[in-house]
Image 1: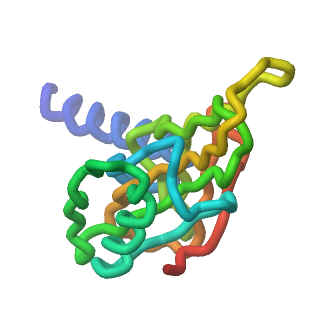
Image 2 (image 1 turned 180 degrees about the horizontal axis):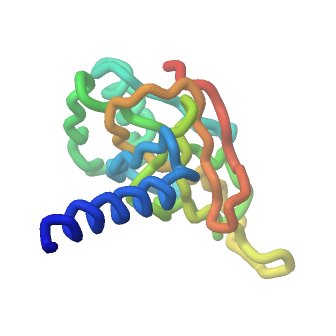
Length: 167
């Protein structure tokens, strides 16, 4: 009797698991690593996404973004045979209070689109903010995967940035 129940129970569990995952067919979770994040990223005046997939471009971009700091952190190591770097830029802002943070440790790939979620913070309207130029950005290591488009969603699920995966 136990032999009959065990395969039947296993079949029921597998069927339930398959039914529960039907909404995520083709969806793969990728662990994303924050390599750098700051409110002052030099040389990034426009909002946008930049995919970096080679060591020379990575070194140049990192040096550009961190050149304002007297003692920038050393260049984070990236194995470009296994991952790429995604620059997420909010663009130049005319006051303080703008912040980008990685909201979820995983990005998701479905139907050729990489989607990740960030905390996209802006100062509340009407509140006094220091009048300084800021340019928030994130540099994220993303494991190699098959995607051609990138979407960045904010904490409410609104699309803030979208673009093609091209260096």
